[in-house]
Image 1 (cartoon, rainbow, N blue to C red):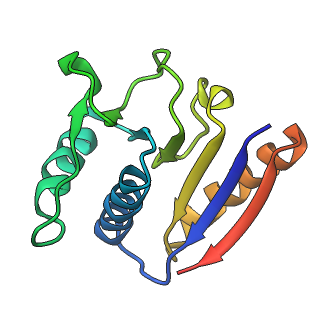
Image 2 (image 1 turned 180 degrees about the vertical axis):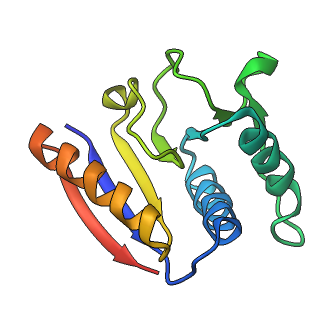
Length: 139
């Protein structure tokens, strides 16, 4: 079973959620982990791809879109195709990806927007019922 961490942001907007995903990916990469960030659409994946270059002055996070085929420590994808397991899955989707059970650690990022919170509660219940270890972090 995976360790699932829910990071509950006090911010309302998606940009804050994506910026936090970048920070979390950078921290995990610096700890020599491999990461997959799962988004809801191709446009979201491309936006995150761009943000990883600009979210902080001086930051460098080696990353790739899954479709590029270049192996990098951080991958970004949006479809439900099988993704090779990595050390950490950062989920930015409303649902749990079908391949999530192959990851030892999962990060769920939640904004203060009510719909986002409701969807995260649903995912929390599914993870709990599946027997995963759950932690909550208020950011």
